[in-house]
Length: 249
Ligand SMILES: Nc1ncnc2c1ncn2[C@@H]1O[C@H](COP(=O)(O)OP(=O)(O)OP(=O)(O)O)[C@@H](O)[C@H]1O
Ligand SMILES: [Mg+2]
Image 1 (cartoon, helix red, strand yellow):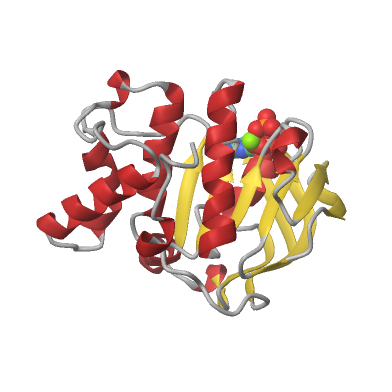
Image 2 (cartoon, helix red, strand yellow):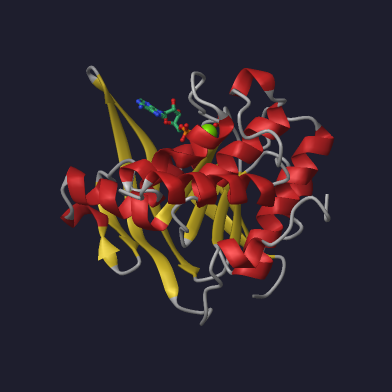
């Protein structure tokens, strides 16, 4: 694995100056309206994520982890409270500005990979670069380099159905890195993978954090996968019940 995943730093720029808050939440609430009934999924969540931190979120099913990650990723807005990403309060932005913020600063990795099945691995990695207006040659070059970085040299033209689950997730990570984001948000990135592939994905995330200073927030059910994290947020009933420090930054 170590040898397959190479040259991270030349592709993903190293962020200087750890310690700055990149995400700040103040008293986040999320209420889902289901017909006549309100369901409160977040009940006053506050936190700070510093640049270069690696945070894991663990907790029972239905406790609000994905709801929180979606708000942290500006995919959704809180019902009440403030969510600041790199100093910008997301409620103050319209949908277009939110999309720009997501595209510039954030990379997403999901449990189900979310690759486009009719596109090759390289084309999938290129999609955020198309949105950012990067010229075709440069797009292709960067996609190939990112795929090599996650150990997929030679698989650039494969469609997702011609790749294993672990390989598909590596394509998804390469895609998340396409625009050189400052923050990666991963919702159960190993949820559909066997233990060997899970450890390979975790190793890629660890190196992105450790060697490239990418801030990572990862939801996981597997406490075994949190040993490289700085902090673990134990989630319960829509709140951070406990923040555990594993490794100081
Ligand atoms: N779009 C929605 N509309 C209504 N209710 C929702 C919606 N999304 C989530 N919920 C509810 O909010 C609660 C929290 O859901 P969420 O998906 O955040 O949990 P989770 O901690 O990620 O769970 P899991 O570990 O199973 O992924 C659940 O009770 C869920 O049913
Ligand atoms: Mg979830």
